[in-house]
Image (cartoon, rainbow, N blue to C red):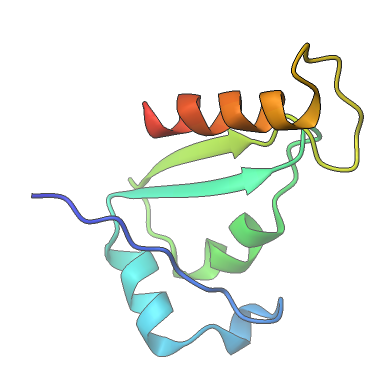
Length: 89
């Protein structure tokens, strides 16, 4: 049986991640993280010191952030489609 954990990473400093969050990150088989289209992820950078070799990474790229979208459904259509695809992973 699998578990999905949502882990808070604190205010942005890897040294301020809770002990429990660090343990969960280190024990996880898969680490999922978000970024904008540019690919840089603050959450991935914060979690990096607690990750171990061999963990699978699932990089979820938000279709819109402060960028514009040409999706026919606008922002809501793009984000709804993104979450549907992400849930199917």
